[in-house]
Length: 138
Image 1: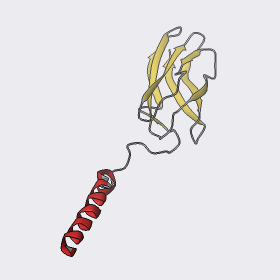
Image 2: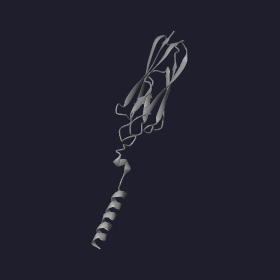
Image 3: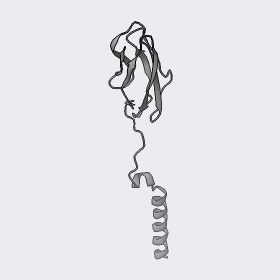
Image 4: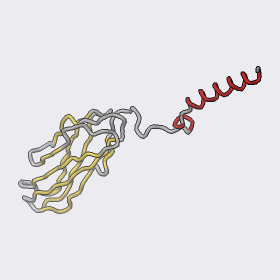
């Protein structure tokens, strides 16, 4: 009878421990995104339009990914001059998701080397990101 009781307790404890088994913990699996601050990861931070004619209207879309662990929110974007228009996401970009910043540049009144900065203000650790548009207006 004592032997049966020991086997019963052993099976009961073993069942309890097996039920508490977490495969993610035992395999040391980490979540895809942690609780880190939002971070920009741009595919390109500078775009060269090359040679342009005066009065050309050209566009380029900067693509980025939120590689942080929290939602990325763009508060504002400063195009630096009235010759550059910018559209950006008005909603939060979730971790792992992509966003787009669309720029349109009007070269009217421009000549020679073109260098335009677009400053993106967001809730990242750096608080801002500089994007650059360059070209040569002939």
